[in-house]
Length: 97
Image (tube, rainbow, N blue to C red; front, side, top):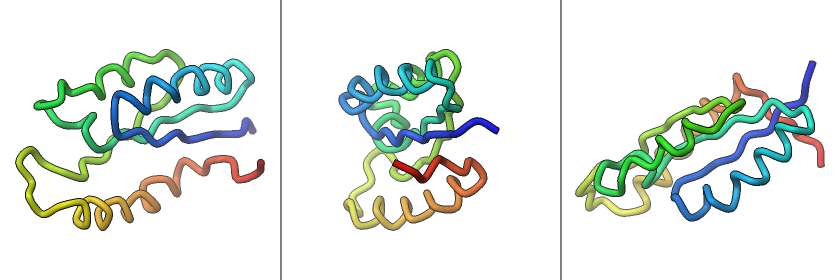
């Protein structure tokens, strides 16, 4: 059974930093997944989730935690991200360092 690692990305900026790490881990034999949320999911920011989906050899999981024009603030986003735990459970990312 291969080890798995999950990267969480919410913006194009953090994805740009995580992508090379994900490729390196994938090439070392890890099963790599991306948990895509935040601005990636919004059309007003270019639906940058498509960039993540284009990565070869990785699995992508999407979680919509905000909507265009949502004025309820980051508290709602944080609350919805608590759902991350339930989404990640079946992936079973590697816990050792």
